Image (cartoon, rainbow, N blue to C red; front, side, top):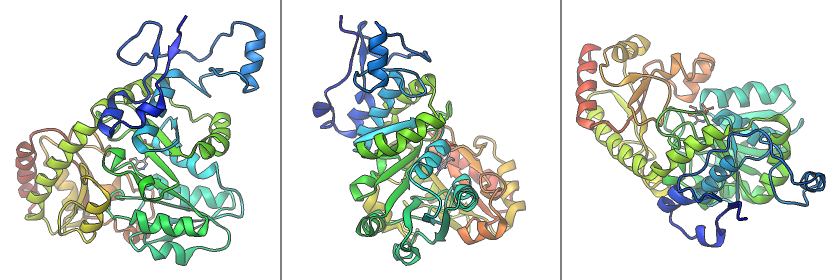
Length: 402
Ligand SMILES: Cc1ncc(COP(=O)(O)O)c(C=O)c1O
């Protein structure tokens, strides 16, 4: 009996990204379902004791326990790997589980890490608090200048870690230059690609070794579940990441994997439309606020670089008001359509004040050094009609005295 049939990767790897996002990684059970099956099971039964022993010995293909493998989760892993152009992918329970695993699986006491200063708050906690606790030293650099990574590196530098565009400053890192410098030195480059997703930017094409995701964002895209993913070579995923994730257990639930599979089907459509909407809203805001950080606008200092390495610039950007936290909060409080929410990548427009939410765990002086000012607001532009969003912003700006 045909039990579960996967795809022939020599065929699927030739598909274009929009096709991969809908069909990549699909495996069908004997029922021939068109939508991916949801396997809510923690364990698997074997036909005989010998099969169980063979599977544990790695001599027989098949599942053993859902902390280690699950058919629905595997479909998602293969779909993300195909989209990324990576040899392999491992899904995790959240974006932070992905970042933590991607770093800790390959580091040990005595290693040194260089990281971009503009990182998501919890990623800065990893570099500034967690890694040093385990004897791993970190140096933080301005990732907009590629040479800073090389200048900060030492004989024991194992890894460079950065995100681009960065949350929430929208700093853009030159992927080709930084990943190239890392390769020359035998240093592993780890890129957090959550803002762009493989639909808009594929860091491995520029030489990145490991690409990690919060799939909670654009991949789910409708604000439903938390998920993460780490992509790399087959050797890295099998021999470095898997021993760590199998034994520490940051496993993605099958249900959440299924939701993200559904999300990926519309990723290309959503991210392109949201990028267009974000540009329209950005152009409006540019004329009304003192500063805007939108890599899709020519006013962004790294606009040319962003356009060279991204297909479009995505739904998220930030802007600043001169009246600090008080005026930023007043603007948020006056919104009638856009939600005050710290999530991003949703099909709904959401706005937050990073200094008092996503980056509140980062000490004030570090926040300022990162460029996260008290007057900064971050906006995720959704799929609503951009004219309604502009009208909402217009009245909120007026109410906040802008
Ligand atoms: C750039 C970036 N990386 C990682 C994360 C963490 O992802 P998660 O919330 O899925 O753990 C976030 C969350 O906002 C993020 O913006």
